[in-house]
Length: 497
Image 1 (tube, rainbow, N blue to C red):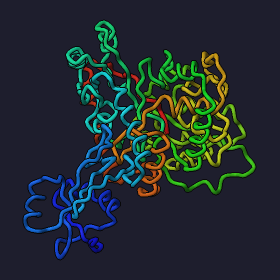
Image 2: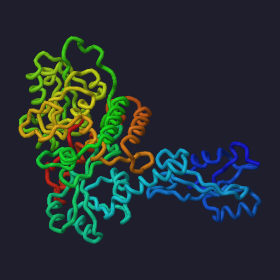
Image 3: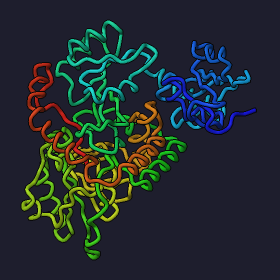
Image 4: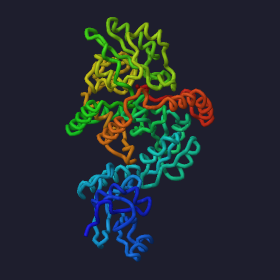
């Protein structure tokens, strides 16, 4: 006879971690010990299982099933479980490796195979350089492979020594790469790539230590530095986009827009109702002024004030909106314009408002190199660039900087396919396993709904703490980095709201 509901009890932490899967597989619920309750035990021959059987107690023995991905663990979920029922019958149950919901064996096998392929891509050991500790859990997933887990170092000398010892490839955080690393890797014959955040990142700012759920690994350059072709630029120049890939890119683009997602997914949805209906509305997104995308990609317009002035000169009768970059608004990075000075050029300052809500209402975006330009393009808006961002030069935007033309014209979904599918790598931040971009959309949507609307996705105490960190601690950190060979003023990531 099957136990009544609430007839299971846990005998250890592993069972506790797999509670949802066990309940879904058996249809029984966990409750207190007592009566005819069944003990759920990890391992059929575990000592506790033997003792319980000797005492005449019913036991549900739980063990890993035959289908497991390289990323599976009780903490992150197992793709299959083998259950030995109290009556001795054995059953295998299969689960989605990311959501941990029951699925059939065929679907499970396909998903485990996808994860195994991602794991197998790291066929050489990875040596990381310059990865902040708070970023490492996610980066460890991206860097794990058959040769072992990634190794973390902070200097070029340590990275070279470890890479030679393990015949590894070197991955450096782009903004913290030691100046001598590239030449040293080339001389030693070791592959080197730069790592940066992807374009669908998180709910909250990287500057406030919110871990990212996407990265790019670029063995050619880095997408925000136009001085040489990045891997993204090469993908966009050389790929023969198939109809299947373009159809997928179109669906992904539509889903991003419908779900109202962006890179950081912060901001409020208020403050747009009193804008004029009879004027052209132009958005000017501010940037972090010391970022490489501005320093090296915007030859004539290199400051937020200069961008505002250029936008006003180009659109003298428009209703001009200026949105400070969230990192600048929070006091983390340089680029602030005094309010009175900004309002001498702009009709309205719109700090704290979601970039998606702004793009819903504006007609045009005027930018140096901001990711807001790409987010405007996928929403069908006109974009003018004063610099050379990754999305410029393909015939989709008006590009004012010299040398912006790429020599190829792309359709919008070709740009989307390269930028959001082929170039980045994605992580399910709940399951802590690699995933496809479509799966990340679900997680970002759920996290944003749970967080609720906020200007910067962080509380006042956290904001004050981070401001203190950036103003007091960071100068010390920069001096320490300089001693390790990281250039002062090393290129920063793309200034993006």
